[in-house]
Length: 328
Image (cartoon, rainbow, N blue to C red):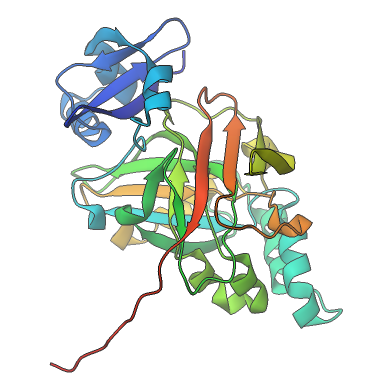
């Protein structure tokens, strides 16, 4: 039975809830954050879901909390600098199509580096168990200060040329006291990016990814279904201007999740005890690839089973900033 962990605001305090497939959500007693629950599970030598179940208390109304805007992202860290946001691209079957379109004009008729990277994944991204496969494209997205919950506005910097959605799944991890990555579960995600900057030159990918991202309210524990199917849409002034299904799970990926995890956590920097990692697995579905130009007020909506709650965020543009570099 799948257990989902959620965080929410309870007046001036924070609280945690658990939700399964058989009944109402329940408060997790004496726990204020998913991070605290994970630390307790590690100390007790039990799974995250077992730690939550052992503390299950009164029933709560998750739908009411969603309507009130009280649900938080399902993971964070007391010190945002110790929460890493990273990701991989060109990991899904079909994911090269949109990227190849963006870069093909610059490359002429030549096969683009994006297509070469995708083909490497198709050929070597799902190795035998225990064997590293080909490494994927990798990027850094920010720290915990860039992580937003459902309902919050996704801010596009004033200097950005585009702000568009990327509907996907993210793996959530904590590093234990021995420096071992421990997967807490999975979340629905919008890995928000600037595709015009990326289209200008693939070496600007790093710039295009330094943006906020949003997570759905649920942390799904246990195994990820092999085939995940969802819907992504862009809503403007109450009307849907673009909608498309998206696929994830290993049945629809050119890399195994184990391979993506290996190539992230092979770096000792990413195995620092106590750190949280939110690692975005990639997508094959973009409104930008279909010619959609987003604007302030557009609402990104993403939903997918087995997640019960949708992920929805409006787009806004941040005010320009003046950056002054001073000698010391």
